[in-house]
Image 1: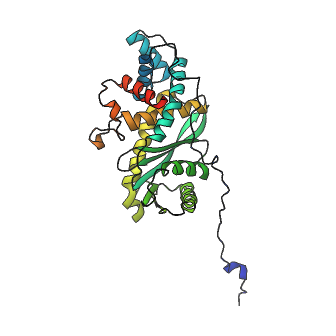
Image 2: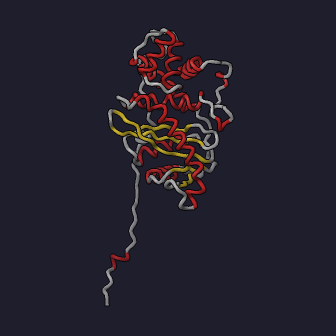
Image 3: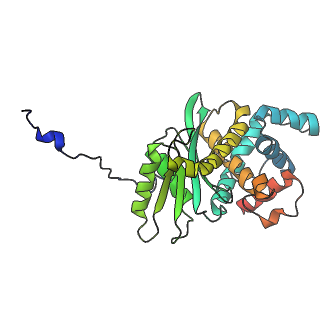
Length: 290
């Protein structure tokens, strides 16, 4: 008769106890460059053209400088283009977080990689399923739990306390950990729910039911990759963060979406009477810096 070993029947499980400070889960942000954004050596319209060509029309900094010279006879270097973008991003970041609007009942999260000094880093995006607004954009050097917590914490910061919110992600276990942590912190609010979409085919009911929401974030990732491809990587963390920030500003407030009947995800009334994209950029930055 085979001898029974008690340890073979013991129940074991993993237990996580978080010891995080508010700084640990703080949303990444671009650095402030100089005193004021409008203390530049060119007219404001040049700044608007730089952001239009570099961000809205997805050109590299060098190509942006060439286009400004060849089309408008405005002589700026590619480094000036990068400096203007970094300076503007500090104010646009605050504007993005302040005006991101309400959180939909269903949101989607995913991370995509970019190169910084030749090393993989990750931009974590969270988007609303209905209004297509980007709720969070966090840059980190890993795909672990803390970046996931930071992104989802910012995304759900403006969630109504009594609203049930479903977060759709892929199978990255960092999201499960992040949702578990955030639910622990939500004392009197309704807990966050989680749906996982695994793989490229619907091999389970959950993936089949929620794949449409996962596809929303995948389309956002492809759009972002189209905008960062001309840069062929970034030379600094702040440069990558500045570009991601301005991309979100463009995506939420300036880019018209066909799925929204060619409206922007977040409507800014002050931009309605402005016809050109460069002047809309200038008005946005003026609002952000005031």
